[in-house]
Each structure stands twice: as structure tokens, then as C-alpha cells.
Image 1 (cartoon, rainbow, N blue to C red):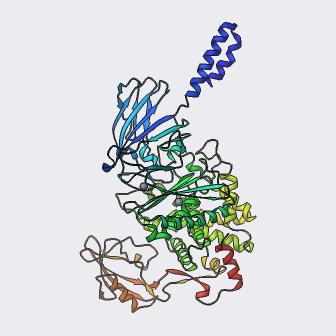
Image 2 (cartoon, helix red, strand yellow):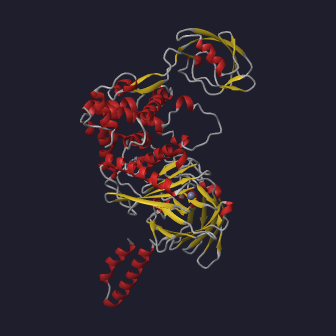
Image 3 (cartoon, rainbow, N blue to C red):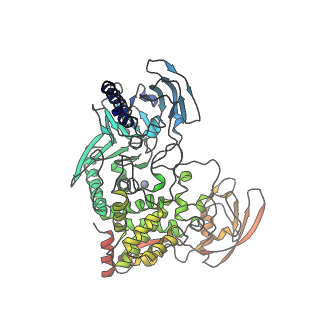
Length: 627
Ligand SMILES: [Zn+2]
Ligand SMILES: [Zn+2]
């Protein structure tokens, strides 16, 4: 901006001065392009056995303002606050001439540096001992780096490119797997801006790498594990099937900015189970091995890879651009996470990696999560999404009543996806499905891309999603009704009817069995109620709740869950039994309970409980068969 306005002034001057000013303008233009000079990060590992990393960061051409250095409070894809500054120490800032600059702490998350003369190198240590999709894990086997947990950045420098140089720990020959762009040397990488840098986890360790292509798209699987190469080869073949099935849903793959998509997997006994999506990569961590937990690990692959469309590019407005200074909130996580949760196991079925019995259990889990949970009555799916900042990795010191009032937007959204998929298929004789909805969302909001790498120019709102459903279904009233009832309202879909079309029975798991609630007793100076009592349980009306001691049911002394089960076994739904309990203040109470029928359901393939009709088989094949 400054350079172009100077250029406009130049013709007003005599030629000599004009030439001089042109030189000044060229110099200014040069400086202006230098203003995008990269922020340089150098990561070294002097004592990996003590689980810390040394980070040196150099900022140049800063101008006169105070440099506001920050550690993130949040991390893309994880919605609670993590306050990564807590593991940063030994922070020192230096001017270009090597003089140490004083730092001040404007808040717990940042360091301000004034009077720096335009260039600052900041050096700090950061401790990290958690291998997952959010934190930092340093030891003698690897440096597993999620950038927000590790990297100090500065306000106002979002558009600057960055270079990262990894320095090999003494005696190691590790390699880096990352979605960062390759740099000038094998251990140097670049990012075009802060958003992309923060979105680029990097595994520096003894990774094994496999590659495959689907059409013009390239995929890399980088694994750090304790298993064999043969296990990796077989596993990556399954990963490729998942990638193919998900590509078929959207009809194409995104243009991965580095030219390939990278799976970063750490299957190590000291890893924490996790999966985290990024634009061109995913981090998947587990304490399990390929040999021991292949299907569970593949389900994470299917979930995370689906995110390279849904959430990374088909992006809710509340998450774009991501703000590293605060918790980011979206009312659309039922779609961003929940629909992804639905497609993970569905794609395993389409890839023939699981059987119909396994899929039946998955369906039952989704249905139970919403239909038998009283949380649905007090918070809609949209409300649940906005709870993410508290529920996703957040910790509370005080007790909450979330077991009665909060349903994870993963399972809630998964159940909505199931209802929507089956409704669309039912209405259209299987010509229209949720796949069409996802593809339409991709074309409208994801595919147009962003003005810069790491950005999405057309994030969607809930109104946009309803509009797309109106278009895909060809029925605006249907879309409005579905959103009003199941997403913004408190209704539950008729899964029994919807699933019968696909040849699945939804039935009571313990039909005819008397039930007083999913009571769980703990032996703590008597048989004490170990969890909140749900308002939908028969014993809720009796006044019993968490920590109360249950003494008698139907005149029988109670010491454990088995004693309760023995009493219930002698009764049937509709019976009334007496109850004696002592509340946590020591007050003895009596009550009567009207027993209900155990409401828990199971989903059973029709062929195992009778017969599967040709129409049901055709519907099911279109739904669960390969695409
Ligand atoms: Zn690793
Ligand atoms: Zn997810």
C-alpha cells in the first residue's frame, strides 16, 4: 500500500529527483516484499529423555510496535481451552545485536517485548509428555509435535510465512512426516501463514512410510510403531479401501496443498488414544497395535479421513478462521463431528472390513444415545454442539449433571445422520441419500477453497445446511421439518420404521424384564449410588440420587447390584416395590417404585430373526454396499 501511493507521486518531480525517488520506491517495494519475510523456527532436542524441546524463533522487520508473543489457548479440532503456555519456561528475548530484551506478561498466555529495534529472537523451552492429537510428546523415541502446544507466535503476523528447521538429536537419524511444505533441506519445512503452520502436526522420529495413489491423488501413511513391516503393508491396503470408499461419496478428493495427504500414526504403548483432523493430514494415536486392535484403529482412519472434506473444507462459520486466543464455538458440530462419526463405521461396512452384525451394534449405539437419554429433552443437537468447549477435553473440578443433560454431539449427530440418510432413501426409492447431501455441501462450501492455504472462504451456517438439504431432497418443507424437529428441537426419529426398510429390527434387548433404572452401586460404607439418577428412571421419583445408600428393595437387604437384579428377577414391569435408603446426610427414607420394562434396545438383521425381503435387501445393498 505504501509503495503504490509513493509511485503515484513520482511524476510530479523533476527527472533527477524522479530517478532518485524511483530508487526509493524500489527500495520501499523491496522492503515491503521483505515484510513477508518468514518467521524462522529452529527446534532442537538437547535432552529428549527429559521430555522438553528447545525452540528458537526469529522475527525480523517488525516495525516499532511492541511484539506480542503468544502461546495458543486453543487448538484446531479440539474445542476446550488448553492454555499451552503452562509448559513454557526459560523464556528469553534478544535484539538483533544480541542484547537481551526485557519481557513483560500482559496475561498468563503471552510475553510482550518492547524496544526491540525491529527484530527479535525468542528462545524458550517447552515440556511435553503426551502423545496424542493435541499436545506435545518428546522422548528418546520421537518428537511428536502438535504446533499449538509447541510454537510461540505473535499478534499481527498471521500472514507471514514460516520456516521450521528440525535439528537431529544426538545420535539419531529421525525423519519428519508432516503436511508442511518441504524446504531447502530434508529437515527444513515451510508454511505459508500462521493458520497453516498451526494446522500442521509433525512427527519427527523413526517413521515407516508407505504411499499409494487413487487416480491423480497421492496418499502417504507415516507410522511410528512397535510392530512389523508386514503388518504395515496389510494395514495400508485396508486404509486404501477406506480412502477409495470415501472418495466415492464425494466424487473426488480435495486438492491437497503439498500435493499429497499424510496419515500420521503413532501406535505405541505410551501413546494416548486420539485422532485429530487437519487439512492435508491427520494425527492418529493409540496405545494399541495393528495386530491387537486393527478394526478400532481403522475406524479412526475412516473418521479422520472423512474430515478432509467435512470440517476441514466444509467448515462451520464459527470455526473459520480459527482463533488461537480463545475457545472457538460452533452450533454445527452435530454435522461436522456427528455426520463424520456416522460415516466412519458405514465406510468400514462398505469397504467390507466389518460385517452386518458389527454394523447392527453401531446402529443400536447411535439410537440409544438419543432415544434413551433425557439430555435430548433439555438441549437440542445445536445446543449440544455449543457445549464442546466444556466437554471436549475440558476438565471440571465441580460435579456436573451432564450424564442427564448432555449427549455428545458425536453420537447425537451420528443418530441424526442415520435418520436423515434413511429418510432421504425412503422418500426417493434409494435415488437420493446422505451421500448426495455431503457431496452438495462439498461443491457449495468446500470445493471453492480459500484465498490462502489454510483458509476456507465459504464457511457454512445452519441455515446454509438446511438450504442444501432443501435442494438435495427437492422438498423445502421436508428440510424445515427435519431441522426443526431433530436438530433444533427435541424430537427423536422413528428408527424402528426407518430401519425396517433396510431389513433391520429394532427391538427390546430384555423384553419383559422389570427395570428401575440403570442403577450402579458402589461399595463405600454400604451400597451407595455411584452415578446421577436419570429423570427417566423409575427410582428418580423415589428421590434417590448419587451417594445415597440403598438398603432394601422389596424387603430384601441390598449389598450390591446383584442383589437388586435378584429382586427384579422376581417381578415384572408394572409391579410396585418398596425401597429403604439413607440419604447422604444420614436421613433414612422409604419410598415405593413402579417398575418399568427395561427400555434398552438392540438392532438385529432381519435375516437372523425371520426373513429379509427382496425389497429390504435391495435397500440395504444400496445403503451398505460398496459405492
Ligand atoms: Zn512418534
Ligand atoms: Zn472427528
